Image 1 (cartoon, rainbow, N blue to C red):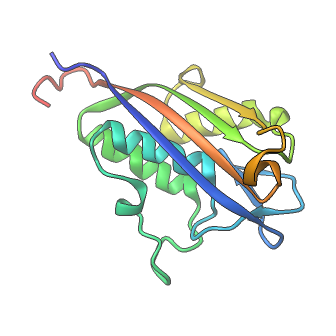
Image 2: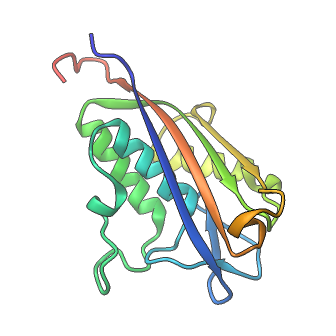
Amino acid sequence: MQAPRIGFGYDVHPFTPDRALWLGGICIPSDKGLLGHSDADVLIHALCDALLGAAHLRDIGYHFPDTKGNVYEGIDSKILLRRTMAMVREHGYELGNADCTVCAQTPKLSPYIEDMEHCLASVMTVSKEQISVKATTTEHLGFVGREEGMAAYAVVLLVRQEGNKDI
């Protein structure tokens, strides 16, 4: 019997004044967004990396490269998450649970946690109880504390799908 698999993901993006702030698949009211090749959703990117790592499928940059002018430029990160879950399932795994933490000095994220969990669960076609999103600050320390950007961390547990004993 193969043991469950654990994956860890991390992402960081700097703030920019000319973009919307996408986090956990939802648009959060803010005077600045995150700079990146896609929509720069740090939470989804960390979650994708955790899923890919747990399934031994490399990382988000390998599957969705950020080369200029490619099909992923400006893409909605929910599409990347949906494709990542499809890859994980193709390799015989299903999500046990995901535990995510967003580090941001501003804006205050607690009013949006449930909406992020609901959105992520919907995109991943899992129950909301399998997704945990938390938010914290860095107590004004580092680039996050200076409000230069955001970071996100994700840990996932993958379990073998029923009927996939040979994987």
